[in-house]
Image (cartoon, rainbow, N blue to C red; front, side, top):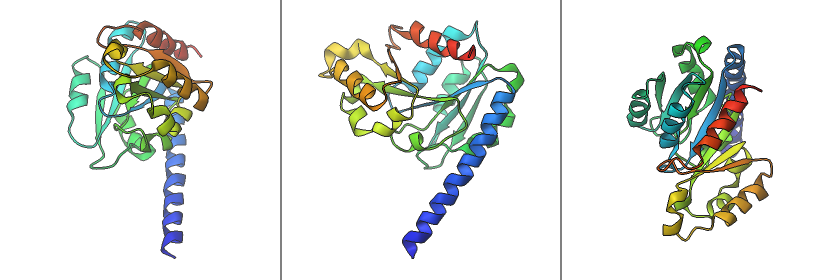
Length: 219
């Protein structure tokens, strides 16, 4: 009986999340805001990629950011220094953002003035991939320092993503990672996914990533 009750509660939670995700999506599309859910492990470089992206597209698009974290506002404070609207969501222990959390903070933005909304999720390769936030697409940041086995070990996040940014490629010579194996496994999980090899430290590959992002505004 306890197991059936647990399944019912989880089913209700997912249904409520999907309903709110649809509301979020309608709200964002009404204002022609392209949104993406930025996911990845702690330390993969999500916030650094976001900082670089803000600076590279600021002349072509107006961005805003929702920062998800378990505790603190450290990432939001970093993003605010780049002069973009940012709202912090602290989950208080939760391993991911959900659509209800996002829906509660959307009114804090002047959506009519925005082109792109980035939702930086809690650092985690598991939970964030399973929750629709109402975004247009999911993007996963994967650092080569995490090892080339991660796509095969955590396939859902890559299956559900439309793009993956392989970060820290400037460190390739200092690791045992095989980037070709990493890309092969990613493509075996999701043959349609876009792969960008970047170094946020040296700016390598960031232009291609930003061009893809801006191309999505024109679709």
